[in-house]
Length: 154
Image (cartoon, rainbow, N blue to C red):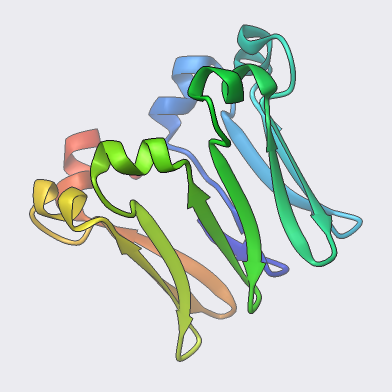
């Protein structure tokens, strides 16, 4: 993930990309709207747009496919801007499966810090991901243990 014009851009593993045959997800700012463009492979599987993001009163709202929503039975994810930081609030059903908050992002001394679930951390045995601001870009440094499990940069 990196910050582009105050928006978090998601860059997925090329291994995940090749599984669907194209980019799973790309986020970009279009006329002050954060647009979530998901793979058409994923879209057609669901039969409707999986996710759309737009800015509403300075809040980046994540609107997920109603098909996916009804499968989970509640909102899967909501995104909002808090002090220029894109905060991901995960489904409580997803959270309870892990047993705690999966990830929280906050700005500490101009550093975007990703605080992952300690359950996930202890499973890997080291920090899964650390984010820091480099020349106004939030760089995600993944755990080398996590990287080697995937076999390539995540």
